[in-house]
Image (cartoon, rainbow, N blue to C red; front, side, top):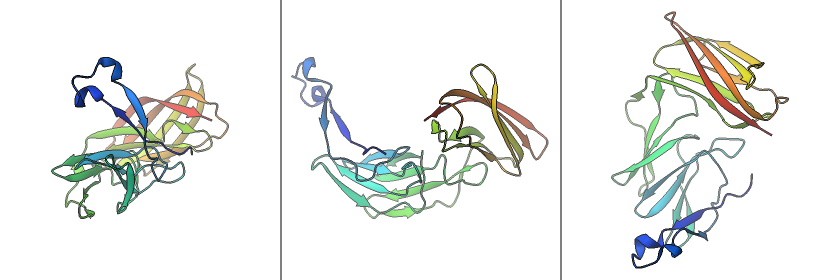
Length: 221
């Protein structure tokens, strides 16, 4: 993976109202992140930027790093209790709330919420979970052909079976995967061509209900 670089866009107009528009929208090279990654989340607390979790191309990360714009330096902070990627982080009253969106898998129908205090590096798991109604996604997306992707359906009901059919944009089937007793199924085909595809997901719930969805996905080499 190419070394991730951090750039800070300088809005001079906001700091110096007397400046002309010609001085706005410039880029300045800053110190590189110590850990290259994607699918991460960021938060600002007390004037410092926190880069949380992510995916390094092979594994999900629990890494937390702090960037100080005043000194252009990075500081490693305590890792999250569990690795995760494609999460959402928000700062409230000086604490960072990390909402897990994808991995590691959580019980069906829940998101895993953790609270991190940047000062004490305390990571506390709240007593309860936040219930969600329904969520359909595949991850990674986009993804490399040799990497594969996992399709998931998250709901408050127990899933009896899941089936996913993949089509090219001409409507020609290029793959099908299914699984029983789970809310997720993995598709892997190293020979599939790079490009855009559409998948159809058919989910059968324990109570007999059937849910159908169509979504797009992208493959790259």
